Length: 269
Image (cartoon, rainbow, N blue to C red; front, side, top):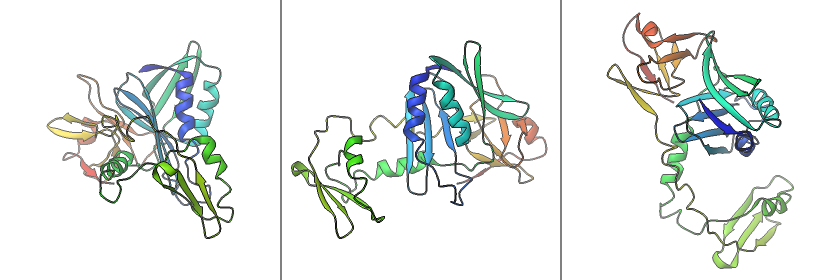
């Protein structure tokens, strides 16, 4: 549980909300906005068929992850408009994993979309950041602000890809198909190195239970082949709780799941 400014939470949601699959895409198992809490940050994660976006804001919270349907995320975003500071809790109620947002007597509860597939966003971003220093990737970054990007939006009027290529101190070359050429004046970059400071956010969230390592957000199969998700890291002295990835509203302690046989087997992405 942690408290966060409603404005900060709303801004974090807004930064990733545009990144989602189109309604006609056959990717409904990934069409969700993921809220992921670590001891230092709350992350919001979204993806489409071509993009992945992760925004974060500083919190002092627990470790849990919960995919949220876009309609529920939109309802939460609207509720935040009339809020100042909200308390965020990750709870399990009647077998359902939920996120509870409270400010005084006002409260909104958002269900986790347990049927949605797992998005290995940490793994993907680690691969990208590890590739920054590859000889083929070394060069000046292209810096554009939101106003700049808006100016180039119509360059690919017929669906052409818009390419931004740094020319160093000269500026940025913009091309879109064979019939468009542009130049963007250079920006002075005095910000952090892209990806700097994200090592803690991208670290795998493992914890030890009964001599076995479990990962928050990962899927495991029991001896019957039923898939289970570890939604959160248990507190000191607490037993891990598992949420069924196959049957809605089924939540059991790990000892109940293990009563029938061997320890869980990790289901890799």
